[in-house]
Image (cartoon, rainbow, N blue to C red; front, side):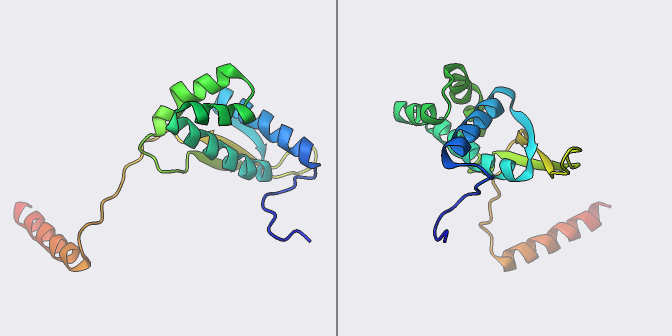
Length: 147
């Protein structure tokens, strides 16, 4: 039984799966976009989000924790200096998964996983519902007067 065991097994032994995911994370940060199967992309998203969060922290301990997963110094430097500063205001959700057509050989569902580029805009919701509805009415009346 697999009680409380999270993550997909991807048809591989644990060591092979760990090394495969480490290689995929390294390739992802090198190219900022890769094509893989949908299930691998969903598993990769978890690791990528963790690595970017470590990069946002930016301290030595975070760098060492990233080096446990990504063994290439150049890729780690790119993560900490170029990629993570883009997402300082974003609280999460650094990647997007776009499903594409199935692979021709075995009909496996494929996807493109890439970094989200557009900026994050935090929405402020300080007003109550009654203030919102009153504000909407005044905006509509001013629009009618100006038109």
